[in-house]
Length: 172
Length: 196
Image 1 (cartoon, rainbow over the protein chains, first blue to last red):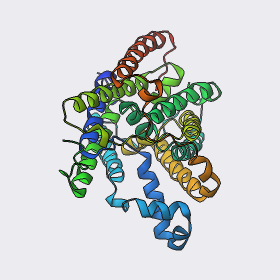
Image 2 (image 1 turned 180 degrees about the vertical axis):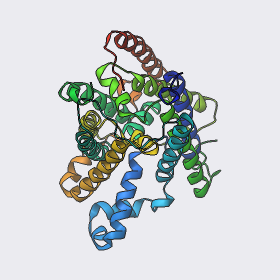
Image 3 (image 1 turned 45 degrees about the horizontal axis):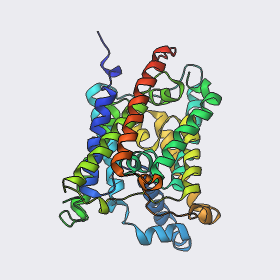
Image 4 (image 1 turned 120 degrees about the horizontal axis):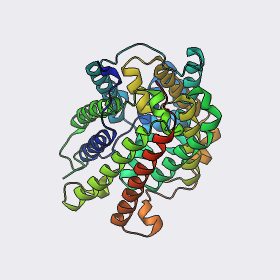
């Protein structure tokens, strides 16, 4: 019997469908796909709620608040909530819902968690410099021929290949 | 004619609803492709699973050709779609930082949310890390502001950088993607399988 939870969609079909989803995003809302923008919106909303005076006095938060919709009125936030729902639906259908830490047998769960936090930290930081992540800068940028998108995409993956050797024990 | 939120056909609330629905499909397809697993994603960097490259490039090529055709047939006004502004040095530095983050963390922001959706605790840690990273940037913004806003080239298109037509650029990127599919297929057959 084959294990359904290990079965994935054909990657070229998935890529084609992802491309169609991106086209729908452009057709309806102009932005294409994005993920990191929602995290930025979240951080700004939390700081504004917890420390309103600090948010007012900081150039970063105050200019963001002046030029962006509030948290639940942001399309990128709604999109990321949708991603969570869509991933959950797919995981349910495929029988993949399970609380677990996924890691190589060569490292401990604890190490995997620490590495995940550091990696997330760097991704969150880098996305601020590049004005988007793999979704908003690289993928969407490739589709709309943005020079910034191609440049960021090449440096994300190029750097990945250069540093992969030093972290190989975490993965293989 | 699209984009519907820009041409006034869809109001703000309609745009929010569509963004949510598009997000559901986005997350569904990512999870179906296996992007909820960090070890599957990391395979692209070690040669044991090129699913990231296949999905990513197929989506980019589909989106690129699709947008071009939609513009050609008058379904969408390409002047109204968002094109990320180019700030050369920040785009490079951001890419490098994200590349290191990808290898260390095994996810990117969108895929980590997919991992969270199916219960991956490492993905939840990654999401926590993203929030800390954005918070760090926000608090240290005065240190980064000059650099982050330096060297703006506006919403520059790659075709204009090379001085070629959009159509030719799309053709060239498509050819490069096809070559990458064939080459990585051969590499994957030679690399030792990794169980995960």
